[in-house]
Length: 172
Image (cartoon, rainbow, N blue to C red; front, top):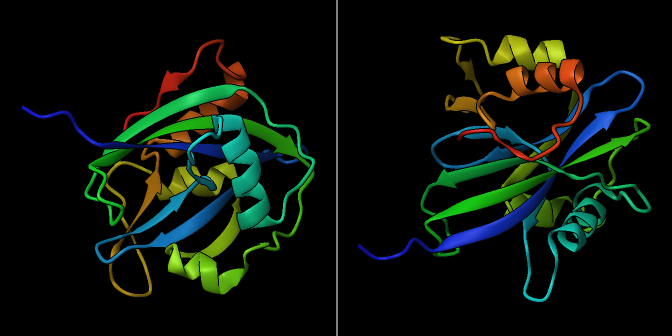
């Protein structure tokens, strides 16, 4: 069996330091709509932290933010347009004051990368949307998912226990 060709990515779990709300981006793929943490692929010569800084600036217009430690890891196998077999995410915690995202690269480029919306969600909203057996439907009649799938549970755990000492595996 051949080795899988993984894309290495770095993402940010951005939490409003006052309310605990989480900032997510909405990806629209042909088979599903996915709400996920902002971030992207680590470029050659770039560290995961460099990648997070670049992605936050490009996607959200966020600069000079303090990027916390790597708290979650996620591995997801799916065919990618880049030719990769799937993606391995390193997710860093970022706590900041709530802000209105202004993508540096603009909405045309974001849409070319399948990003169609950026939205703050309360933990309760995420939990309600990720209840077992409940499936959201998007405006284009595709399933709407969260990445990671257990996002509501993971956010509640983070709120109660604080950041883990070592990164935890979030599952798909």
